[in-house]
Length: 453
Image (cartoon, rainbow, N blue to C red):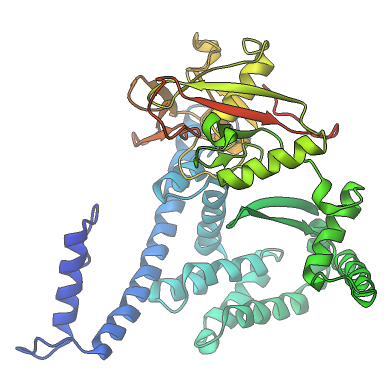
């Protein structure tokens, strides 16, 4: 039997050895490649079966919480709040992913019985089950159940790639209810947006979710302009030209390299002055770090372009806890909000959540006497701030001078999760005892929306 509870490395190895032994004749100690492949396949089926069981438990948890909320007189529209966040914490996923998993579990329990069975049998993995749920989500329950049985209740899914599976479901959805497809398309157009996320090597993806005609037209325009410049002897590659043209057209700058859009570049004093190698951080782009040399080059370019507005210092104690900053407004709500965003490096403090900070929240609620201070406040995304307000959730600050700012969250089931403020950039030297981080405030466009307190 698969080991239950927290799986230690030795338990996993013991399970592997037992499983391999079960596939070999008695007395045969040699493990063949065939046995290894068989075990890999069996473990994949086991993973799918575990996901099916997780979905069933998720639905049960949601029903239990909603029933409890109803007994306590919680308004119907607020019943079940926080369930997705509990699922996310238990599965070490972001709250957004927890919401997706909760929705999938409900779909499997109500409309997609064959998909659920295929997942339980290991014929579909969780991601492919989610593809079926997403592609058929615009249909009513009866039409959805028919397509579910047609696709996942047969051997059609055996050997079918993920893209082909999505295509099979989509084809049947379009035939079953064309009007629903049109409504979904209209809804998708209303959700057009632009996103920004960091990638390796100090790069970012600037992406736009657009209606297909607009997206194709924009890409074609950049392509034509790049090809025209190449024909005139420009030495840049086509992809480089399209990227530079995109930046120049969006910002109105003559050259893409002249744009000063970096905000709150946090760097240690040693790295700023050229002797250190501690990476800098960008709270306005959570999760992004910049090597010290590249950060110095960014600052130098901004100085030459006269886009630096001011520089302020953040002070950390020997444990790495930020304790102050050289801003005259540091005691005002806006100053404190800036301080917290910098301390938490722009990321929501909930474990495994990658969302940017949108709310400055009291750990011990203000209406229960919690003070508005650096110690009792944290940066959260909207979803996590709403989830912690549900019945049964609580938080407290863990006082420990040896570690960074720590918050412990207790869920309605009694599970506890701790989050620590990320370590700020620190100098390589150990003296003086109060290392500094420098915040270089570069040009901030007038349309930039600041974080609200």
